[in-house]
Length: 113
Length: 112
Image (cartoon, rainbow over all chains, first blue to last red; front, side, top):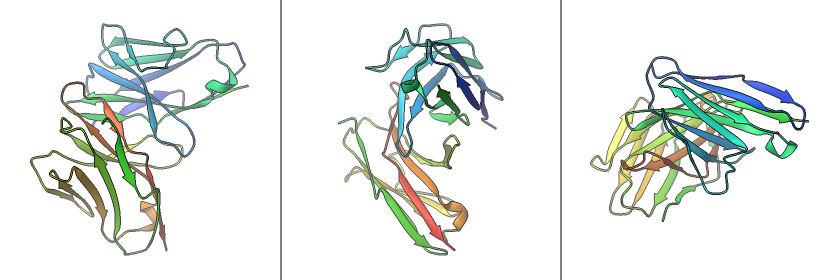
């Protein structure tokens, strides 16, 4: 149990375009989901907390207009990287909260050319 | 006060040996301490977790030892196997927000 999926697993896009990443909790409902960014050989950096039915809470330094988060249902949160640039290239990982534990998705590798 | 300090940064262990990774925290409000295993290109997977009212928890070859007074906790991997080679992250959270504060990670390599 407690499976979280992400789609797509890899995406390559041109600079200036927008990319949407989906995070789904497959076998449980998650009021709260989290979005992280991870650079090579580094720890996970929390970007934002996504709560179903309300606005996301962004961590300091994360541009909310660039990283749009929508938590439309108890099983789906989306992260849209708007007007992506090469510096946005990274590994994006979501997690879904079940009781006190976060269960992570497999991650999405974004490459912006 | 929000940091979780993790050591060592990297670790090489012989097959069959014991791998030990340590974490330390400052914030006494933390009340949940999970450990995650991450393989390259994959998301972190929950290994084992502990709460402050327990000093030790064991699941298979993985054991967490928790020292509340010292504000430290550690992961022990018994009979380490090459398949355990991965990056391990400790984390801490508190009931108020359930946000995790992650350690910096330990890259474990188990030699065959």
